[in-house]
Length: 555
Image (tube, rainbow, N blue to C red):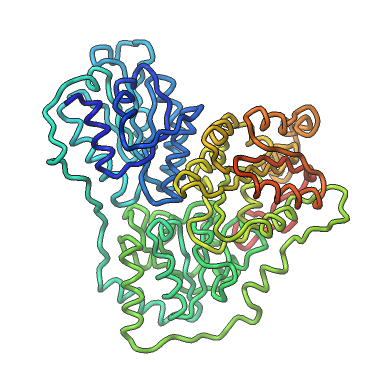
């Protein structure tokens, strides 16, 4: 069997039903067999978009998708997408075409060592020079992507390898197996004892809990133990906004609108599950650590003790560890009950909601998010990339269900939003996905609107147009005392994003008032295909943030 056909057959047997990519001379051999496969292929308009779409496809649907492209600049365009998925622990399989093996390392046309280039932003990468190794490499690729801490992998296939004939029996091919570390029962017991002995414990729900689909069990454990739950940015929606134990988010960019920082500062024992304690969450580590004792459960042993001093570390998948915690707690036969906070967490957060003032001449971007909350139901999926709009989204959007909020968390990638929404739409069988992005970020990978239109995918794009590099302006202003090269006034005057969207066969409109925005949101929701709203807002509104969780500045 020709290796190209073998690759497609293995993708099918591994459960891949959707692929995002662009064909080219270096991978056309494989595309020949993809045409008749049971894999739906979505032709994107930039290779980076293929990886973002495959990334969010997994976030939204829990299945691996393939990202495909040719060699050279096509392959190097995969790097940002691989990095984005790597930072957020999202599994996907990238397959790239390559020059023939005899030309490797000789400066041939569109020949680049992509396997080496992505080595630091992927779990593993291969350039397969021996055709007979292709089946075993692909099996390892899927197993690597899904096992342990999930992440992206890349398989680079020289053209002569793709076209080689090998002996292969699909019936004998065994699909990859998921391998995850199991928690120690004695460590689970010790964690429970530490929480029982605490005066003010708190649970941090990280993105790993969402990936493991362990959020319901963790909320049940919190209820049984009567412990407040803080979510990281990547776990937004893991506990409903209205839940009495939802203490909000913690971090240096979640703002004063969250009670999470206060709850964390008052805690004596912290149970972190599926979180990495990265800088945007912790800020000044000395303030964050304090005298608190940390219990850290994570699937990646290298994360435990890396940033915070850990009193107890447990290497395990949240899917295994959280049910064991719950079982151990219930085995004691008594539910815990603690004194309720003087003011409910929900009431604290309500104090900082920016309700729309319909008398304003220019909209406040923070107030816009309250109308977004009202316009879309709890089943709506959202994507957001980077910048001040992403921070406002994290602060002011209310997400009540897990697996509905898909940000570029660790990488902060401009351009992620629209292709990610495409992946979310495909994974959910055509359900709407809403992108929240700034006017500058809109121009990154904007061509993917054409993909949404061509496949009639209901991607709704909300541009928060402040005509600035807003987050960079704020950083320049408060950290350095100047402003330079961040104003983009033309984005409200010379640039016409409505025409841009209409040029890609999308519905679109520009709005200046809350009344117009309300109507536009209804129009967007009713539209069968993609829709873009250019929302003109105040230029200079700042976002709440600080250097440590005790020093958040409220604007």
